[in-house]
Length: 465
Image (cartoon, rainbow, N blue to C red; front, top):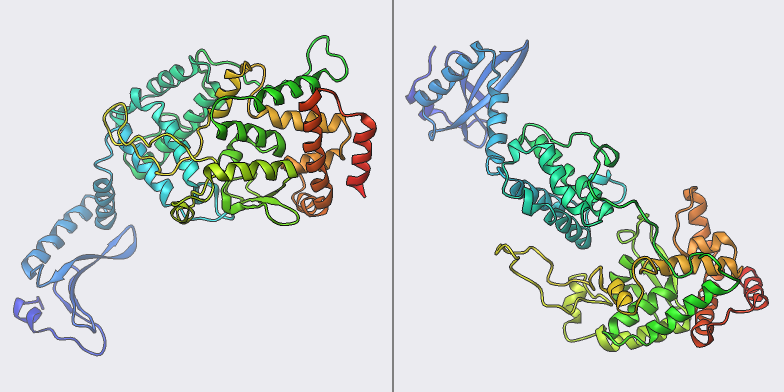
């Protein structure tokens, strides 16, 4: 018997949900709370399914029958009404994602919202503000060429042309990192249906030749072997570099950053993002504890501080340490040792708002720029070259066993279990190595002479005891 509007109005709640059937699979579901919901039962591909048609009385009996009849026409045409509704909803959600700029912004917002821990798949792990800023920067390199283009008709050739412009500046690694980031943006857009296909597909760095790109180079250091070198020449060059850094007349913070880089063996990116809350410089054994989120290997790392490093930190604290806004910075996770001193740009060169953190660190290029002002071009020495010098000179002087030096540099052991053991077992050896290295640098800075090998061996014997 067909339903009437009077019967629908008279339907009252009961102890259990019940149905008032109409025809063609349409029925009114009356729930225990009194809600009256239109449903349509149907079969598709041999399976029983149900679709919602609205809430009575907002959707009346006549409107519910019209919706039922529309669904029956779709079924006759071989279309599942539920899947059609999902597809329409998804299409509406991405309808505004028409340009590369828009799908890039949407992807960045998705990256900011991730909350997964270190045990989660890589694509679902929470990203640090620094990582988000780097991804935003990488995308900004191709936005001038791709930003306003229709994302649905974007071609591989257009993307490669944009990457070529980066490669033409000699930034090969940057161009390939940019390619990988753009591919992630497009892959997500394709999964969501905003674009028909990712134009980069499954391409990898080796699949795309970036015009004008330079070959990958290692991080240059003045301790690199040179033709005609005699014993001690690399150490003497490093001593001169240390004296030049100490006499740097630019920003004091930059000079301190370079000196700490030499003393600690940290990567430049790790040093720039250090926070005061990670440092225990007042204990009997001062250390810096770096969290997994900062580390290249996603494993926490302890850096043992020498007396000289502690003295530099005390000097730095007078400049960038605990100020009136420190509490606010700590709360924001931005109590940086090396905060950016430049005012934050709120409007980009294109006149559009710039999404950039209020608190930023010393720029990525600051230390290398200082080295260039001191006369050291990128082929002579770069910020990362201090790590190479630490490894080269410590090993040559036999200051400690090679695996102790590698652990101090946080080079991941292939055996993760053994790596964890080393970090604990080498505590005393690494502490002694840190102080030996600082004393060694003092000797080099003062005279440029090489520490006698006998002194180095005594230090190694002490480190092993």
